[in-house]
Amino acid sequence: MNEILRLFPPTFQDRIKHFVGQRWPQLQEIRVRMHQKIEFIFDASICWLDGPLPDKKEAVYILNQLSEYSLYRMEEELRNGFITIEGGHRVGIAGGIITSGQKVKAIQPVSFFNIRIAKQKRGCADALMPYIYDGAYHHTMILGAPQSGKTTVIRDICRQIASFSDVNRSKKVTIVDERSEIAASIRGVPQHDIGMRTDVLDACPKAEGMMMAIRTLSPDILIVDEIGTERDVEAIIEASQAGVQVICTLHANDIADLYRRPTIRKIMQESIFERFLLLGRGRSIGKLTCAYDGDGKRINPGRRGGDIEVDWRAAFN
Figure (tube, rainbow, N blue to C red):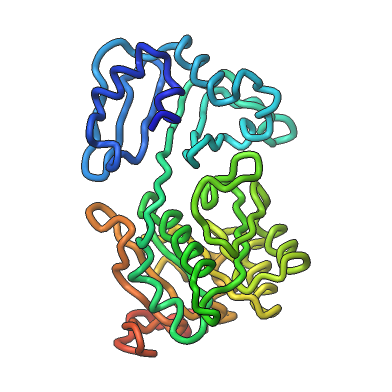
C-alpha cells in the first residue's frame, strides 16, 4: 500500500500505517476532509483516525503528490473530479467548483479527497461465468448498488474471457474504460491483469469508445462500466447489431430498477440482454445473489428458465 501512503505527509503516514495495521485487505476507502477526522471504510466497519486533523497544508501536499507537482498536466482529470494513481487506485476530489458555460472548468480549492482502494481479486467472477458462458457468450448486465463490487467483478470476467486456453472460450475483448477503473491504466499501461487478448480505450467516453472499437479493433466482446445515458444505450444496441457481445455494469438496487429508469427502457424493449446478474452488499459484496434471463426468469447454470420473478414485457406494454 505504499502508493496510498505516499499521498500523505510523513507525519500522517506512520499514523495511518499503524491505524490500519493488518486490515489493508479489508480497506475500501480513505476519505480526507479538511478539519475533520480521516475516515476509513472497511468491508464491515467504519473508523476514524484520532489526532491532529488535516488542514490546508495536507490538502496541498496530497494534491501535489497526485499531480506529481504538475497541476497543469492533470487539468483534464481534475476537471472530471478524479485521478487514477499507480496500482489502479482512484482518488475522487471535491471542493470549490469553477464553472464556464454550465460546465466544470476547475475544482479550486480542493478540500475533500476520496481514495478508493482498487483490488484485483482473481477468481471473484467464477460463480458468474456459468451464466455468462454456456457454450456461447451472452449479452450480460451486472447489477448492484454502489460499492457492491461490480467493477472488481467485471475486471475478473474480462481477465477470464481473454485468458482461457480453450480456443472456443478465449475471445478478443475491448474495454472502454471511461473512468480508468477497470484496467486502471497509467500512461497507457493497465495496472491490473485484464487478460492477454484485451485491448483498452482508456479515459474514452463509453458511447464513442464502443463505436471506435467496432470500427478499428474487431472485438468479440465489449466491456463497459456503469452505463446509463441514452447515448450509451444507443451504442450498445448498435454493437449488438454488429454481432459484438456486450458485458456491462449498471447501478441498481434490485431487478425492478431496470424498468423504472427511462434511459434503460429502450434497451429492455429491444431485448438486447440475455443475462442479468445481481450482486449483494454488506457481507455479500461481490457475490452473486440472483441471476435472470432476458425474460426476467430466475435461472440456474445449465437451465434456461425458472420461476418468473419480474414480468418485464407486461411492464412495457
